[in-house]
Length: 178
Image (cartoon, helix red, strand yellow):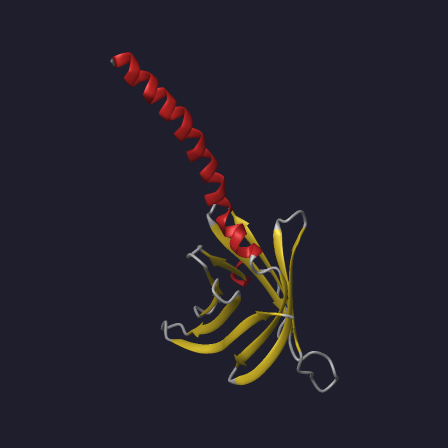
């Protein structure tokens, strides 16, 4: 009887341990899998700074799938005929810190690559809640939320004063280009 129990225990372990090990890489890959859902061509619509806007957003993996690159260009033009807004955004998964790091470069102001310009986000299901800290004590809360039902993304940007009071700056939705 004991021999049978030992055989059953060994057989069970032989089946369960490989399955458990196989599941761990999937769990570790979940943050990158969420980013996979952002790849493609999108139309961004909504409000930024209380103004209605429409942007084109192209998203792809670069450098051996290490970085997700977003290129956002407004359809609105400035006085010179150039896009009123343009940004290059890079997102990387930092497995050691178990968080995303985000570099957001745009045409609103030059960026000197200081640590305060790098956003950080702990994974939260289908949300990427980024926090950018300003040296003056204010923050920018930018959240990308994926809607699996509609295959869309909601982006919100809230400015946080030094007191912690939040004010909405942007609320936009990305839908796939047809």
